[in-house]
Length: 354
Image (cartoon, rainbow, N blue to C red; front, side, top):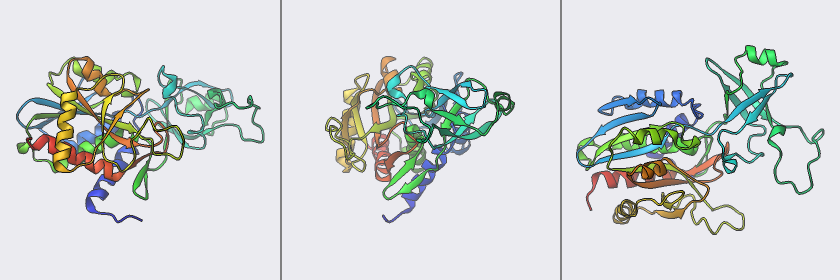
């Protein structure tokens, strides 16, 4: 097993605390409340806007810079309740490529989040003894074969427990260390918030070369709704969005198009659904090279981030990603070293002049 140090332990603690909070799309309250409690004494001012985005004014002098991450995690939604009390599910957005592979949820503990309470259960499917036959070679199991069992015996009983159509449902595995890595749910995008949190603990606002603000947005996984709203009311000169990145370091063929690996350092993303600002991206690269911080480069497909929303609103934006395996799954996996190097790079950029 790798040796541990205090900084790694602090980062792991932040990641574990943040990822284990429930915060599905539109229900990010517990994540935002955690940040208000832990960041309030470290910033000049902290507030929420009308849609729920959290904005923390860190301090400093110079051009107005926003560092951003999103609070929400992917979820499924209760589409219907069967007469026997099982919960049928719907995806959270209109993009089929964003939906988890059907294998991912089965057997995972589930939390169904209602208005005033939450109900535990588990994601289930028919077992092999009674499963319906699927066409030979079928790669996907129909989503109506997957459901949540909350232990209710009828639809009325499920409703009496607070279940209703539209409730969000998330998987709830524990976050844990596996060798050099951390695995669990909601690495997308609580890891980015953990990076921002450790950075906030380690910087001196008086040393900043920018007037720095943090934003933690809502509903990124549903069309970057929070980021678009934030752009309309804040006059930032430039922004750095931090988000989950894709990695290609799996024992599979055909991943040469994704030359990113865990442990290789943070990733500078040049394009996803937008082209990121090359000058700001180059500045991050220059700081990394001067400080000896390894970075990776990538173009992402079937991907979007708050950074794209900022670009479309006229804010110069770079996207800094942390490599992650098994995205949009209950076992998203990241390397501790990449997270700490991301903090180091941001610290260099914010406090050192080229």
